[in-house]
Length: 601
Image 1 (tube, rainbow, N blue to C red):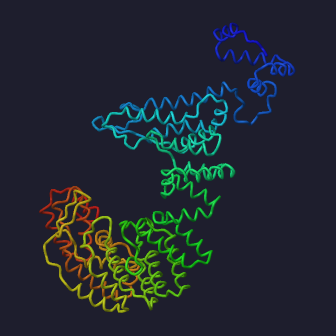
Image 2: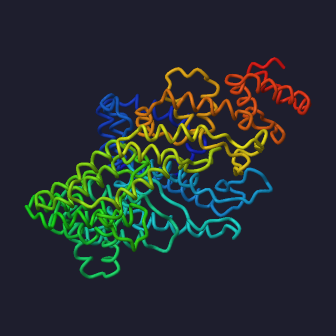
C-alpha cells in the first residue's frame, strides 16, 4: 500500500485551490502510462482503487452511466449530509416564527403547517431511498435512525406554544414512509424480528403518522414470495400470542388487518375466508368474495345468509344508518339518488345475485322484493323502471316499499343544496307521479289546469333582500309553486317563445333536475298546460317582480324579472318601470342593470 505523507498533503491542500488540485491530479494521471495507472491502482485501498480505475485506467467504459463509483467514505459523507438536512428541518420545527408556521396577517393566530414540513422531509427521503442498502451494509448508522428522527420531530413539535394547534402531529409521505420500513428490514435478521420492529416503530411514543398504503404495498406485494410467506407466518404466530395485536388484526380498515387479510389470500385461502366472515359486520365489501366462494361450493343457504349480512352491514355502516338498525327486505329500502357520491356497484350486483339465489331456492316473493331493491339502489329516479319492477312483483307484498319510495322521490324533487324561491315540496309532482302510476295522465292535466286557474293574492312587488347570497327566504319572498310547473313545461319546449321568462323560471323556480319527471310530464296534455301556465304567469306577473327597495348593489334579479314581464305583459312592465323612475331614481346601479337588459333608461 502507498504510504501517505500527511504533511505534504496538508501543504498541497493549504497552498492550492480545489480547482488547482483538480488540475494537478489530471496532469499527473495524464502523465502516467496505462501500465503505471494499473500498478498505481493495485497499491490503493479497494474502494479507492475502484474509483481511480473507473476514472483513470479505463475511461470511456462508463460513458452513459449516470454516476460513477464512489468510495465508502464519500458515500457516507453524502448520506450523512442528507440525514443532516433532515435534522436541520427538524430543528426548524418548534419555532413559532419559523418556516413551518402559517400566518398571513400579523393579527391572526399562527398555525402549524405539517404539509410543508412533510414535503421538505419527503424531498430528502427521495434522495435517501436508493442509498439505504449500501448505508446499512457500512454499519455506520444504527437501526434506530428513523425512529430517532420521529422522536426528535415530536419533541420539536412540543416546543410550540399552546395556542398553536399541533394535536394532529406530523406525517411522513410516501418516500419517507418507505425509507423507514426498508431501513428496519435491512436491520432485521428474520421476518419475525422485522414484524416486531415494525410494530414497535409504528406504535412508538411519537406523534408521527405514516402512509399505511405504502407500508401495505411493501409488505404484501413488493418483496420476494419467500420473504412474504415467512412474514405471514410471523403474523399468524403473533396473532396467537398477542391479544392486543389480535384485536388490531380483527378490526377492519386498520393497517395490520389489511396486511393479514391480503397475505392470507396468497398463502392461506381458508384463513382469508374466515377473516372475511368475522369482519363482515364492519366491512361489507368483504361480502362479495364470501358470496362467490359459497356459490362455488354450491352452498346456496350460506350464500343467501352472506347476502343478507352484507346488505345489512352496508345498511348499518355504509348506508349511513344508525348502527342499531337492521335491514328489512320488506320495509327498509336503500335509495341511491346520488350515485356520484355514495353509489357502489358491489351493492347493485349483490342485489341481483341475491335475487337469482332466491329464485333457485323457490323464494319467489323474496326475489321480487330484491329486484325492487336493486332498482331502488341502481336508479330510483327512473320512475318508469320502478313502475315496471313493481308490476312484475305479482306475489310479494310491496306496499311498504312503494310508500317509502314515493315519499323519498317527492322529497328529492326539491331537495337542493340552496333554498329556492318556491315553497319546498310543491304538490304537483305528487299528482303527476300518482296519475302516471295509475296510467291516467289526464287526471294530472285536469288538476293542474284547475290549479293554474287560481289567482295569487295581490301584495304588490316582492320584497327580496340580496345583500347576502345565502339569505333565508320568507313567505313574502316566495313565489307560488305553480311557477315550478311552468318552468318544467317551458323546459320541454325546444325553442320557448319567451326566452327571458324561461331563463328566469329555470334560474329561480325550477325543481331539481329529474329526467323521469319531465318524461312523464310529456305524456300529459302539455299544449293546454303550457298555455294555462303562461296565462297564470301573465295574470300574476306583478306579484313576481321583486322590488329594488332592499337590493344593493346588484339589481340583476329585479332587472331580469322586469325583462321577463316585458315579454309576457309589456303594459305591466311599462307601468312598473314608470314607478321605478320616480321611486328609485337615485339607484344608479339599478339603471345600469336595466340598460344591460335592453331598457332605454
